[in-house]
Image 1 (cartoon, helix red, strand yellow):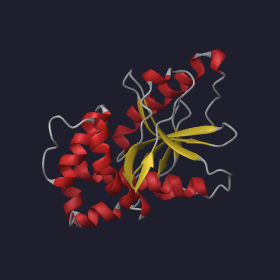
Image 2 (cartoon, helix red, strand yellow):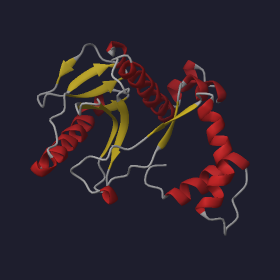
Image 3 (spheres, rainbow, N blue to C red):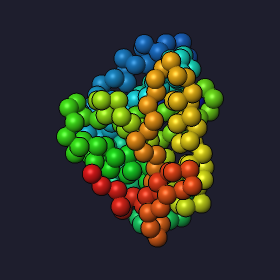
Image 4 (cartoon, helix red, strand yellow):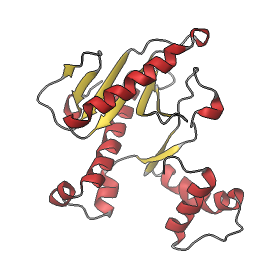
Length: 212
């Protein structure tokens, strides 16, 4: 629910959870109190995970969307609950794209944790008031960082490349913030013949080639 206020998001989540609209006069605190046991239940059982927003130093906090998003810990769970078969998923392209993004986030978290850094590298998303969104930003404790855009097919690689370059330029635009050059920028795709590098220096990587 990108772009929704926390209040609207919780009202929608309440309606989905309880199969009824929340009371019109319910404030955000009331909704959170009702929803919290359910959210904690799913998180404690590794059904969902929170992905927080990266507050890049170049932007003021008020202009960067840093509230957490909830993602599935394993995309096979929603696929199973929805009764999806491989054949049906190929017809449901929007759902397939959503599940592919969840799959990539899952793998990025696993491989990031395998780096052996203490604490584990953070895996964030980036979104700001200018409409720029980047799917995953990995940041090490020493400040090194890299970013991924996730696209199901090669046709969307230029869009992903543009977003990554815009993020890089924003981080480096303010010398006073001392933003570091990214260690890498990459577009993860579902299928490609080989890994390659765009003229901008962005890696294009099939998810099957991703590793620690």
